[in-house]
Length: 124
Image (cartoon, rainbow, N blue to C red; front, side, top):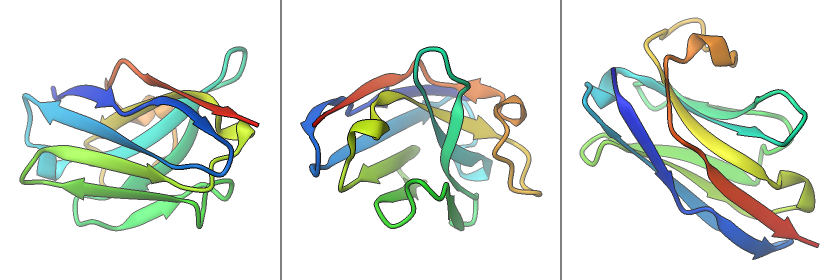
């Protein structure tokens, strides 16, 4: 099972940008579907974006046009570039890995590996 470690969270003003990274180890990274989720206290974990093993991407409507997910299989790393951040983006962000290639899942229960999370706080 792949191990995941996120980094890059922090405090940013509304309208600013952050880039999250998620380093993977212990598995065949290139074969996994990777995704970013986020969670705020008292709410369910929300799927944000996903990228297939072949590089195809998909986004939640709330972040489409502002966030970009990418992967570097040579570095075993997936990224989330977040631009035009809003206060409602404040959350703990998690990266996750799934062996389910199709259909492209947005369900947390379909992802077997998770990072520890990184806090993103957007001040208005």
